[in-house]
Image (cartoon, rainbow, N blue to C red; front, side, top):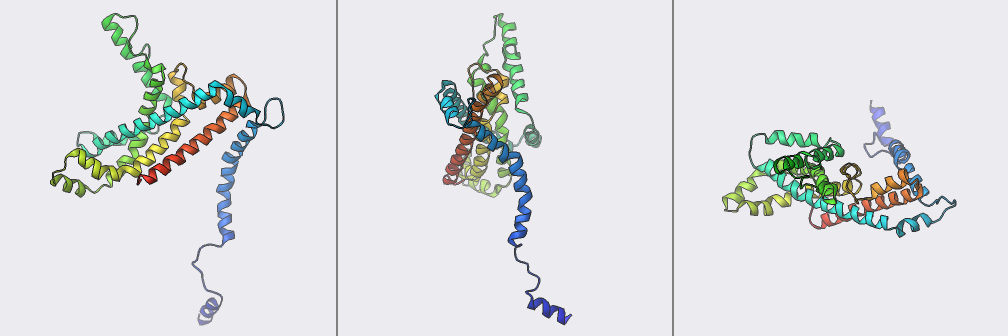
Length: 292
């Protein structure tokens, strides 16, 4: 045993240091290969196709044609303002609802919190379909109005407008903000709340000075996720049937499926990806500077 120990010491012993670079590379190869096969390669094909017009060759003509079209500019503006407005609405509504669930005792609060986890698994078109049943042209609200007043049609006609899309997105994506907020509130030291209350601080001041600083990281996480999801949302816009509301994802669908303009569709897709990544990065920078 003494000879074995001596030989181990002479040879450097059993090292507990980090794995060798070659071994680490072998462990990294499978996930990198899967990422390249299922994400980077298709994305590279889309980028490649965006530089290949139908006339053949490689040029920037598809980009020039798309950027010169008014349909693209309108879709770009609609996509950005809907995503930003929906994110702001989700942050405000999600923060208020999470405060109520976490700090206002009422029967069924835990059941509501659990339902939020289930809600996250719902497809977006299901929420839109539910809104159509309630606020659609022949929905419950308009039906009740016509039954009572005898009018030819009900007053709720906003669901097929941009405001209907915005309502559907806020309804669907608010739980994505509430989930991290509820997790953050569950870790909040209740002693701070009790101390602030005992010193005479009212609820708005407690929320502003005690709860909100603790909630900023969760707000940043939930808000950045909602922003990216809204930028790329397709089902809600499609199922609301909003007239004149064309976003970048629906423009990709229209060019690829309806017009068979595959280079143009790829150009819009590339722009959509760049905007998503750029706005997400900007949001994270602003959040970090805000102390989140």
